[in-house]
Image (cartoon, rainbow, N blue to C red; front, side, top):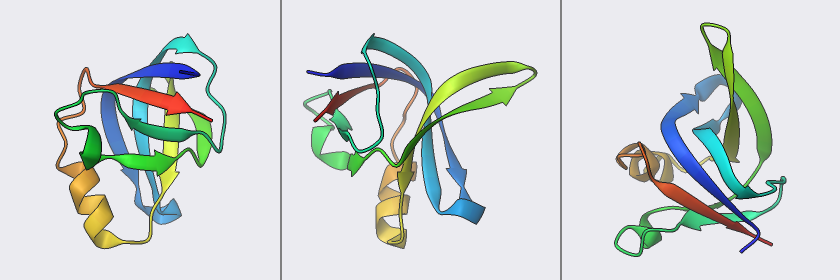
Length: 94
């Protein structure tokens, strides 16, 4: 495994067609182009994507690492938004 990311919450950056997972990098290094999936076996098939970018989004002056994923398919976005992201682990691999 190249990296492990713990999600605090998700955001939809609608104007850029990006879905973001805001959280903390627990292990390894995160890079654009990495394949991402939920580490949780029960929900592992609900999310899969390629990291479009690594940004730092902030609220009240606190900036957190954010993995962004490009989307065009509204069904994919609905599926991603339906996941309870808080505390979930995302596995990132080359």
